Length: 65
Image (cartoon, rainbow, N blue to C red):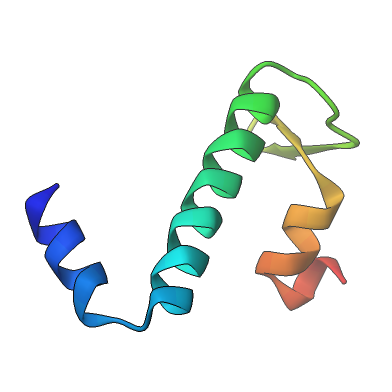
């Protein structure tokens, strides 16, 4: 954690805040996905099914846009 904090201290405050909010947002969406909450898509590959959020898929890959 100290490494992360010192790295953030070298960044402008806004950039550090954006990174922290981004990480928190990803964590929240992943918790929702793992709990099957607010999922609006299912991806199936090699016999396995994965709950997903369409907005996250679109934001991470042009394939899903």
